[in-house]
Image (cartoon, rainbow, N blue to C red):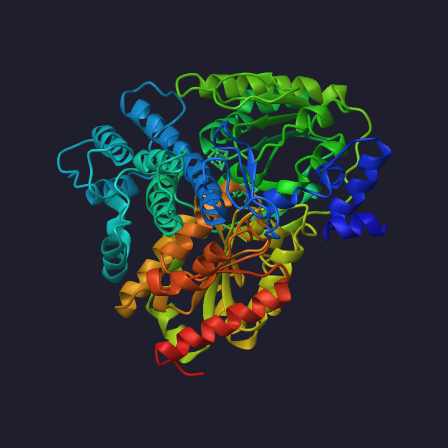
Length: 622
Ligand code: NFS
Ligand code: SF4
């Protein structure tokens, strides 16, 4: 069916769209079509509803009003809107990070049954970065002090975030010179909201500089804390084989899906799924086992650390329910479409929300806190098992694809013998031309996975190593780029290295907060070369992004010196000043720019040109 093929390149998606139509289930694509044509003012960033003298619109053709009621022009309105997107994105990642600090603190105080320190070595390493010595202290004492120190990073008592020290010296000088080194994680978001209130900062340049500082407070602050503490509490990822796409659901087993972002909930569900008595209970109901699978980033968290299978990315989250095979979906927060409860109501699937800050229509709310999470997870898994016998017809139309995940920086450097030198040698000789991070979401504006898969394919064919995260990482996994034999898809140089190391040419580095792993890896490369991140033959891309979080990520990539290509156009075209600053002007400010290119073939060309230019800059062979 052409309609389905126009919506997604995935076989499972196409078949389940057909099933959804048969079952009269409305999906994100249907609702997208119902919204067309979308508001042109909003698409250009030219509408403002920051205050109630408005809402206001600027006429892009210059005939109607050129000022809002307060006098704000197109530049101010577009900049403010973009700033608020970044503030929301940074707040989301950073609030997720804060939740992990709370768990660490409760673990330290003995109040979080089920959680523990799984990577004590990393605990000590990160603690020492915060100036906390481990001498003569037990792990819990160190954990308590680290939790306290990290809370300070969120506040107003500091002049600069602790983990900025991980960035190359030259990069920190850039930030200091511009006055955009973030001070406190919450502080930068709060200041961004303040500056964009009516009548505060009305200079589009200074607004956008604060937006970069706000984004940096996410990348080198909130998200980085989220990733580091997740490793400490749940283990630092190591490569493991797993499976992806809807075919990971099992007809003869209890299927539980976790959805959302924070491993604080999903790790406890995983623990419960593996407990002997619950497995026995499942057997007594005629199930051959308990099958836990993920969607979106909490799925990526489990995939990275425990090889848990992945049923799909963002646009698959509704479709996975139309299999009729999901006995329970457990959600935490972020990227969870409020339509899911309605979809589930057509099947026997039980829907459960778990976070005090995220509720959804058609879901039962069962709140998880560090002190009850282990117990609550067991109760839910038990109820999922009981729901197994209520299943109707089940339709699992595809076989899963195998994939290797789990590439933390620790693992990558470990595989290279402890230093980035072999990678640098390969870059220097030109065996590998460069490296690109492909990140971000799905968006119904773009055929699902088409942007991610096409871009990754073209890059690896041209000997560019790809690292990916989030829904991009799931897309390339579904397409087989992380399978054990995927090195064959790469150009000769990259293929040789991947075959020798036994790794795929597209490395799964985790969830969206794990984009910080890419920053840390880039810093290691820059430091080894004695240069800045902006001099490296690397780039970032978000071919199918949709969320405010993705804008924050793009902004901290660029502010960290990484040229970044976006697929969908952000709502900025109403101001040529803002567009020019983002796509050209930032070069002289932070040594990197954004670019927008919805066609992944053209994006690949732009990225290859950029990488060759950076190689020339470093005097590396063509
Ligand atoms: Ni990232 Fe993860 Fe996916 Fe996009 Fe959403 S799940 S945090 S925001 S849609 S990649
Ligand atoms: Fe209109 Fe200005 Fe109020 Fe925005 S802040 S809604 S442009 S009056």
